[in-house]
Image 1 (cartoon, one colour):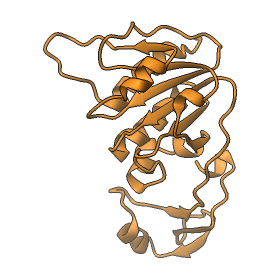
Image 2 (tube, rainbow, N blue to C red; image 1 turned 90 degrees about the horizontal axis):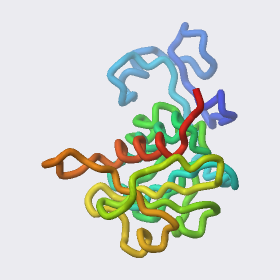
Image 3 (cartoon, helix red, strand yellow; image 1 turned 120 degrees about the vertical axis):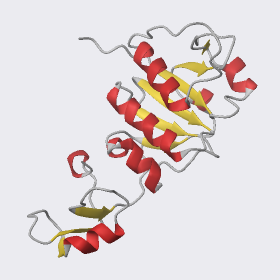
Length: 197
């Protein structure tokens, strides 16, 4: 998938006889070094690359998410639901770490990824996903927007919630304590970035 989005590998190895590009090695060797349970046919090494954030469309900003699986899943949701980039605050799990890349299912290569200490400085309408007290999510139309997702444990800092143009809260069923950050990201992005059918 990386090749489809213009990423050039530093090195690629593939299973002997697979017909894939790269240096051929025995399939058992790939199985030993791969973190996947299924048979791996190729492994490639790419340079970490942060890219420029587009000025149009919806950007997802991850602020302090510690779980790399949630980070990767948010990237996957951002790609699937029409976001144009994903940005990360300091203290967020590495988007290029193995667990995050695996959870992204290749979407890490499809979207620009950038570091950003202040999501309120990004262009467009800023929307903080607050744990309580915000309005229900709404479609944002075609205006540039930044959907800000907080950490799994503590949510967003108060100064980001109050400084954002809008604050949204997902209503939960009575008795439910919280919603996984990646699930909340997908739901809010689906509403915000309605994709025409």
